[in-house]
Amino acid sequence: MNGFEEYFAMGGDGRFIWSAYAVAALVLIGLAVASVWSYRARRSEFNVLQELDGGTPRSEDGNP
Amino acid sequence: MTNFKIFKYANPAKFLYLCEKTFIYLVLLTIIFLSFGLYQGFFNSPEDYQQGNLVRIMYVHVPSAWMALMIYSSIAIASCIYLINKHLLANIFCKSASLIGASFTLIAIVTGSIWGKPTWGTWWVWDARLTSVLILFFLFVGYMVLFDAFDDPTKGARAAGILVIVGFVFVPIIKFSVDILELRTLHQGASVSKLSAPSVHESMLWPLLVMALAYAAYFISLLLVRMRSAILAARVRSLRMMQAQRASRAAIVPERP
Amino acid sequence: MTRKKRRLYTLIGAMVLLSAATALVIGAFRDNLVFFFSPTEVAEKGIEAGQRIRMGGLVEEDSVIRDADGLTVHFRLTDLSHTIMVTYRGILPSLFREGQGVIVQGQLDAPTHFIADEIMAKHDENYMPPEVAEALKKSGQWKGGNE
Image 1: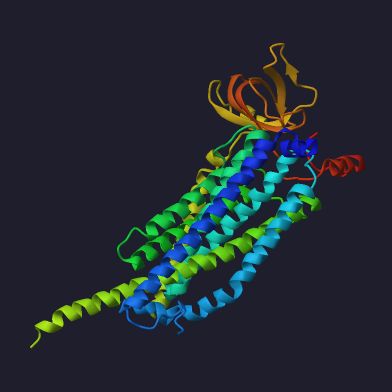
Image 2: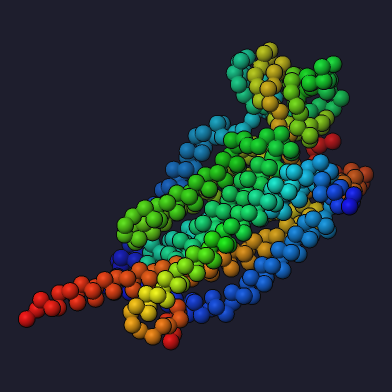
């Protein structure tokens, strides 16, 4: 346990190092989640519209 | 019928097929590179002789700055293609890549600032190097705002494309003038890209390069998601348009004799 | 000339003009874009006392004197041809030491005496483990100016 705490402290610079990694992780994960969400929302919107169109539901790439 | 240009020029069917085939491998590649890079960065690389453990911030900071410049340049080139050839897939690339580029720029600025405080003794200075990265961030943000500022999406894409190309002229000039005119800055010079041997020790160069690969794989995976999203949005728009046209035609028909 | 070609030439023309304009502007403002002066420039440019500037150089070996209050330090800042005495009161960055490149911000109160209110340590572009640095110094291949 002591070894872990010592490693985590990074010789006194731990707060700088971990916060830098936290910022990077937060931004990258946030962006990925937001992108996937908006993709799903658009996809379901597209499917609904297509069914309204009366046509057979097709995949997004235009193939039946 | 302008909406159907998208089917004519971009050939999204082929693009989307390619996306579907490669996406899972790209995600896997991202995970592999990321875990290997983080392992190298935290457990398999030494402390620096001057900055100690703080050198580990470099493994998230430097590749972010590389990605920011790379994405900006590719948007500028794609904007040229769009403005000259009116190739719509190029336009979709620009729209989808800009937010990812802005995010990497933000990471570069914030992690650099967190590194600067304990190393230099200040969070931020207005030297040529730091200021030009901040300008890069504003260019990304301005680009995204301008892109959506017009009712006519074509106008927005054209205006934003011009902005990004104007900015593209500035960025390398600023970068090279810092190096060639030897403008003195607080930020140290380039270590890896300079013409002589890189002045980063091998043991620290590895995690840096692996993290750069992880970022690149992340960028491409996310780019595919966002481009698919943008293509869907364009199709939704044209479907809406068609339905509105049909509805108005239906409303007119009964009045005819 | 097709429309596509016309667009291409317009774009290239605009980029060339813009690059030239930017290069000229940067050339003209070169002195303002420099983040700090060297002690030689400070001596030669005749910078007046009281004018806020930034000055960068190396902390001369064996020149750092700490006052009894534990906050005030005096040291000589050198670019190896000119040397200016610096007094600073405050917390020093951790990389501050003799032989290190630093940037001081403040004003001259005499032609060779500088009162600093901020000190920033400059980091060089070399990254290596301590053992390697040690080995390089021992073998005489040390290229960094510091230490």
